[in-house]
Image 1 (cartoon, protein in one colour):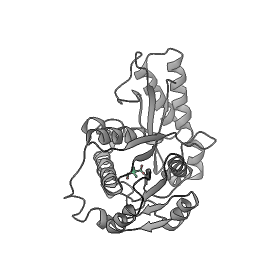
Image 2 (cartoon, protein in one colour):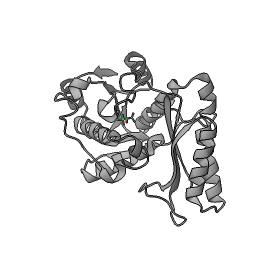
Image 3 (cartoon, protein in one colour):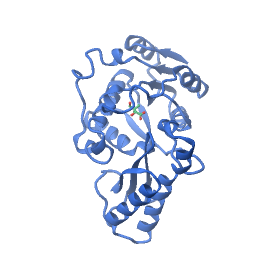
Image 4 (cartoon, rainbow, N blue to C red):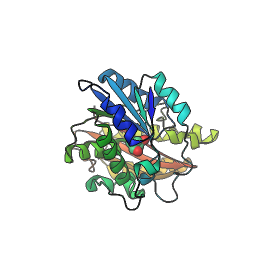
Length: 281
Ligand code: PAF
């Protein structure tokens, strides 16, 4: 696997890939876990070349968030990617990606999807994601780009962005990888203390509880959402939201919706955990 750090090196490496190749992109911020490696495996199975990126994108962190402390472990991550059969790794610096600085940079926004759910408590976050992913799409020109379902809102807005901006790229959603406890794998799980780690699966089991009640015919969605937040709060989480939405539009779901999902986000100690599961098959 080749590692390139500059856009110019990337251009040269990308140009060397034969034009008949089907190129899959796995964008990450590093600190890789089995969920990321699942994206690489999936890319390998669907594509002939796999390009991974590692870039801790300052645009998607708010002030007071963990940009400066986000774990950076390029050597270990690069070994993992190589072991999984990635062909090329692009790991640029902030200056390489944003030479005019983060403030003056042109932004991409998908307004209708950014201000709800996680966007409500992380203003600017999804514009930062849309901006960096559109740059990676332009630089790498993949045919397929793979994203984890744990970040469903992110995946949905990237799909919308790719369609709205006419990127000829298939956005593939890969199911969330979980610990046996149900806890969704996340780079930020490393912020949890041992005690918090034991509590953390409650986010998933609470969402499962909501799903079961909805499938049993309970249509009091607002009540179920509040009840779920109360369960989390009682166990020491600081809930941000639990919300029953339509998976494709992220609009509030109703009993007539056919692709309902339940989404949850909550702080536990230093970690902000998110998760979501399908209600409808
Ligand atoms: O999901 C992530 O790791 C990031 O949001 C992404 C998609 C790599 C953009 O920085």
